Length: 275
Image 1 (cartoon, rainbow, N blue to C red):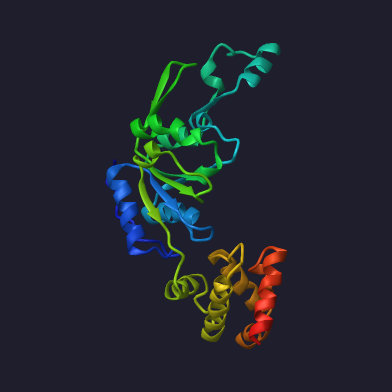
Image 2 (cartoon, one colour; image 1 turned 30 degrees about the horizontal axis):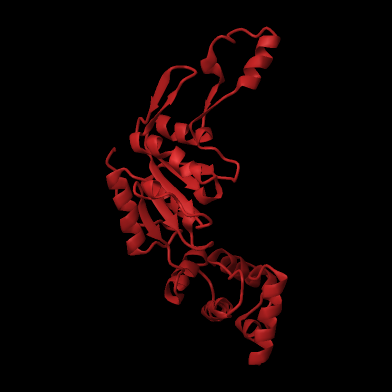
């Protein structure tokens, strides 16, 4: 791999020393980094921060339940070829015209190293990770329709995220550098807030963070508020000129943080019990 500078976080992304080390180990080994952690811990944003920090192109492959591994390599547009043949288009015999590279193929053919984000790999079928083993190991794949082998011009930095909805195969895990992003403690959360809101009033920040962690600590809450929801909450609080005293009094705009009826009812009962 072309020598890349070390990843040391980005201006808008606070990364722990352990996470930085894991990313740099992935780059050194030329292996994907598999990132797990609860929603809202910055798994997806990590890829963008790596691209920004190392000045690389970012390619995003968002995985769905119906996504097949081959789609990341290439797609043979047989429908368009049939359509062209029916209307007498020239060059129909040139199959290469109807081969469209997927996101992995795009990363392989990039003239300079790119960051490839394979986002939420656990959403796909259980065979999906196994179907990518050869391509990620060899950094190449074969297109039988054109008898062409596509080999990576520059090894991409591959970031794979998972919300642990499914267990990933051992053979796949062995080929990855693994890191679990712990939920930020209050000190790191303060750093995150300062990055996103450099002029945030200290009193508002302190009260918002205190209320946020109190919500997360309530036993029985099914969907705990995430970092992204805290950032949204503070943005709205500032827009509405809601100060620290109001937060401590009645926890306004609760629906920005809590997202289902059962959790809202539970939080309100717990708040009433503590008053």
